[in-house]
Image (cartoon, rainbow, N blue to C red; front, side, top):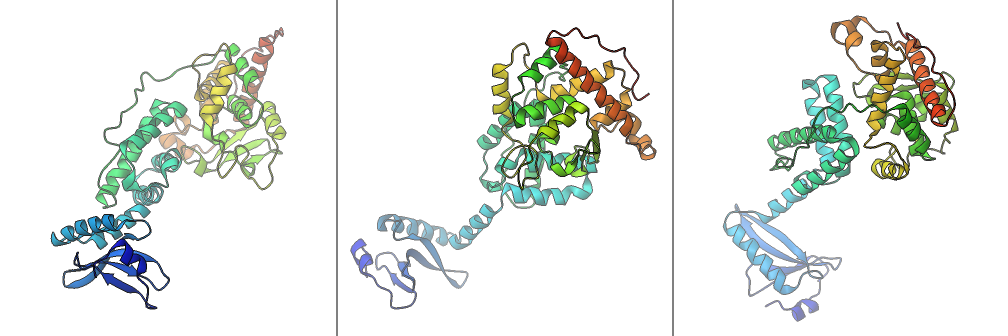
Length: 399
């Protein structure tokens, strides 16, 4: 019979799956399942096998639109294409998300990279690109990549954005070779201008102003801890209670949470310890700061709100606190290799062959260095408030 909107509405199932074919368009029909659902379908033969392609639900598509799609499918079939197979391929591609491909890629390249490099690449793909993890890898376009790169540059700086860009591009190149996608959407996105290496060191007055402007709550506590410990933003922002030992007065970052893949012990000065003791431990939450499933987030909004109230400090970043802490420790007489140990850098005394034999963690020296930094910041704050404070004579810490 010729299918019409009226005739379709009168069709009934005979108790099993039934297909009513159209007299006007060969192979086109309406399939009524035993449960009552109705779909437009096309029956065809390809490679000696009879197949059936579902076009869409009767409740969603008009008869005219269904016929139009059926004709298009039949033309493709005449050209040797298989719409059923193409549909399955698209469904499979949709299940290949950036997150799943990133995990496969990291496993595939693990044996070819140095541990430190693999840690860095993992951080890019699993943390920086996490907002795109649920998207199908083949559906992500250049505008989406470019927008995320702008966010990264704003939050972490142009250099960080460029490194994350290079890592994602390498992953896409591997994915194309594995047949997981057809194109690399990173190609054509703009590389950020890194300019000269940043060397901003905050003055004592600026340190005091930032300390005093730090708001109550998680963000303010993080900012002050960054000042006192000279650690990286995400290391403190994703701090866990299990990493803190208030009795021993230390933070111990596992290798999985450090940039160089090495466990890192951070002694806590009295000032840093006081902040953590005053931080409430939330019921059934292992992470010290933030909410939800991860560590602290919303960095840009929090810093902007703080900057709106902060006077006398221009164009500063959270990473400047780390550089300033290292500089002030040096100014106070802390030896370079101890500062490197505080920062968890692998170079100098701990780099290359020397590092193989020198396994010292310098914990007593690091504690003295961070106590010195805490005292330095405390003095800067007191002076900013008008106190008549004379800084102690420069000492050789960690000689």
